[in-house]
Image (cartoon, rainbow, N blue to C red; front, top):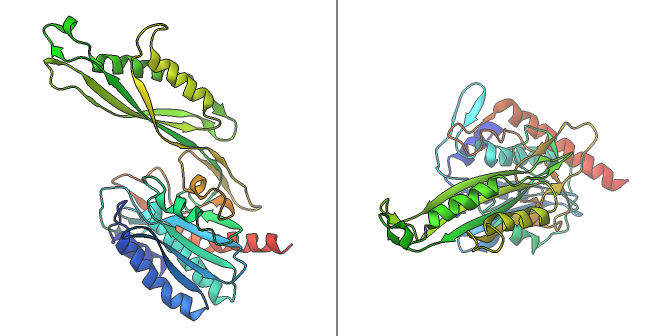
Length: 345
């Protein structure tokens, strides 16, 4: 398969988070002959029943590992292509990236090069389960090149994420007599209004921290004073989270001395990361989070690079430019060779 055919083959295997088994099996079958022909190994590393990471390695010491995720967000839709793009769920996030990595490895092996591996992980789109599992099983890699859509530029850093559930409680009553109840919806709205007024920090490299109220739910019926309501919020971190957490606590506490408007339940925190650059490579900053914090440095110094644009990932128009796939095959080789060269000095 060429890189276009491999991208489409991967995209056409539905692998919404939690359902990665088939695409993982495909990758194992595809990589097995490559391992056999060039003295490598391929492993299925179980993360959960019917969910596994795929790890392939050629040569020791392992200087660089090319890694990306094999799960996608819903809904699944299959691939198609035109003169300029390959379309479909996961085409840019991140199955086109996986295909580019594999073709880069094929070219380097054919050229007699060794000292690198491939690591494909499950669960990045939900909780980085595969990356956390891989961090507990390091293989001595000195550098990990994580694949996410960066439009073929090396990322100088990526923002972190702070996710909360905001929960308000009240007392149910007939809406004709609101004085007999206490509306959780009203309290939640007031708390969220305070949250939206929080000044968020900015970083010279990573840019501004941003906040999104993603979901709101609650109440029983229009004529019932709501006894419960909740919202989910996500903040993109650009530095230490302590000040932002304190501001959130003040926002939901309401007036000093009064009853709290809501409670904060922390769901997830992923720190912002700052990444290295290599001479001769274009750079950018990623406003999204990646598996890099979950790897915890256990797979080596991280870099972030991949074809495709994050602006079309997770959308009905997800696609990856064919030229970027072709270029990425060459650039991944250049990155690995540069890392190998730096290690040999």
